[in-house]
Length: 139
Image (cartoon, rainbow, N blue to C red; front, top):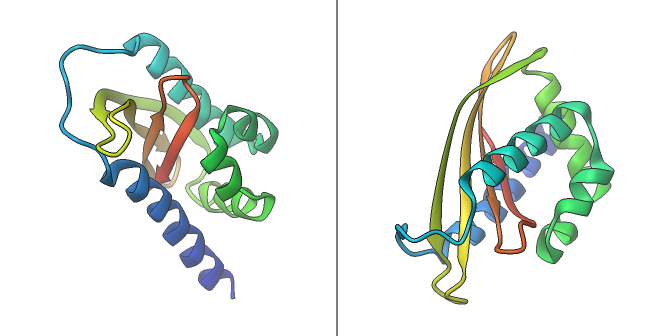
């Protein structure tokens, strides 16, 4: 049953990420985002996930993500990340800007490589122009 729940969780997170990014166009060179702020906020999201800080994650989410991130879903995310071992550090951050084809609004996407004692994880975290969390995928 636990494996089934984790599979559901990963599928849900994947769908949210795919939905957010599937309507996106190519990266643009003129940025509406401050790269340093995106990096800092994305790193904060990784820290919140590792601390199990559901309240602050929810506060940071846009409306779509607030609906997707129920307490059960976030608890499953936290349980999954705990299996990676003790969180060590962020080893690399790449930030890009993409355009949502439907809304024509830019989205900042941060891809973060994080080290744990037992595994490495890749976080894909996206933000809207209000710097609200618009997508989160952990692999």
